[in-house]
Amino acid sequence: MSEAENPEEDKSGSLMSHLVELRDRVVRMVLAILVLFLGMFYWANDIYVYLAEPLTRHLPDDANMIAIDVASPFLTPFKLVLMLAVFLAMPVILYQMWAFVAPGLYSNEKRIAGPLLVSSILLFYAGVAFAYYVVFPLVFGFFTSIGPEIVNISTDIGRYLDFVLALFFGFGLAFEVPIATIILVAIGFTTPKKLSEKRPYVIVGAFIIGMFLTPPDVISQVLLALPMWVLFEAGLIASAIIFKDREQEDEEEDDDIEDETGLATASDNHPLTDEEMEAELDQAEADEAGLDKNT
Image 1 (cartoon, helix red, strand yellow):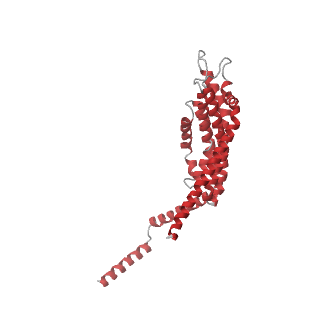
Image 2: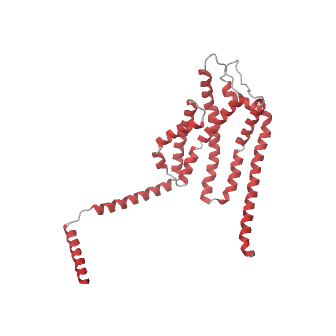
Image 3: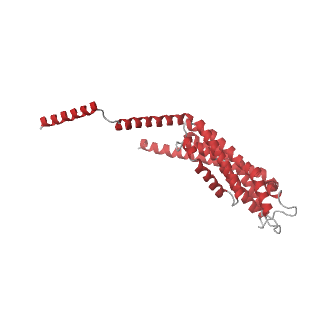
C-alpha cells in the first residue's frame, strides 16, 4: 500500500516545489518593479516632460498640453512611471521566467534560448528608442504643421500617453521579427530558402501589421513596416548562418529524392529493345507452359 502511494506523493511533492519556486520568482519580479517604481516616482513629472518633448517641441509658443480629467495631473505621471518600471525591469522578469523553465530544456535548446532571450530584450529596447528618436519627431512635426491655422493644438496628457505607449509597444514588438524568424526555422516549421521565396507576402504583411499596431496615420505605418522588412532580412541571414548545416542536409536529401525519382521515371519510360522484347515473350511462353503442366 505504501509502495503504491509513493509515486503519488513524489508527484505531489514535485508539484508543490514547482509552485513554491514559481511563487518566489513572481515575488522577485514584483519586487524589481516596485523598487524601480519607488525610485522614479519622485521624478514622475520630469519624466513625463521628457516623454512629451517630441510633441512640445513642435507646438506653437502659446500652446500647452492640457488635462481633461480632474485626476489626470496625478494619475497620468503615475501610470507612466509604473509602465516605465515594468519596461526597465523586463530583463529581471525574463530572466526569472527563463530560470524557471530552463531545467526542463535540453542542452541544445538552452544553447540557443539564452542568446535569443538577450537579443529579444535588446531588440525591444531598440524598437522603443527608434520610435522615440526617429518616429515621434516626424509624426508630431507632420501633425502640428498640417492643421488649419484657426485650430489651437492642445493635447490631453492622458491621451498623449496612451498614444506613445501604443507606438512603443508596436515598434518594440515589430523589432522582434528576427527572433520570430529564427524560432520558426529552429523548430523546423520552415527554412530560410522557403522564407526568402515568401518575401513579397512578408512585405505586404509588414504593412498590414503596421496598420494594426500603430495609430491611423500613414507615416507611422510606413516607419514601422520598413524596419520590419529590414529586420526580416536580417533574421533570414542570421537563421541561414545558424542553421547552415541543417539546410545543407535538407538540400542533399531533396537532391537524392529527385535523383531516385528521375532514375525510376527514366527506367519506366525507357523503350524495350528487340532482344528485351524476345526475352519478355520467351518468359511469357515459359509461364504459360508451366501453367498447362500444373493443370
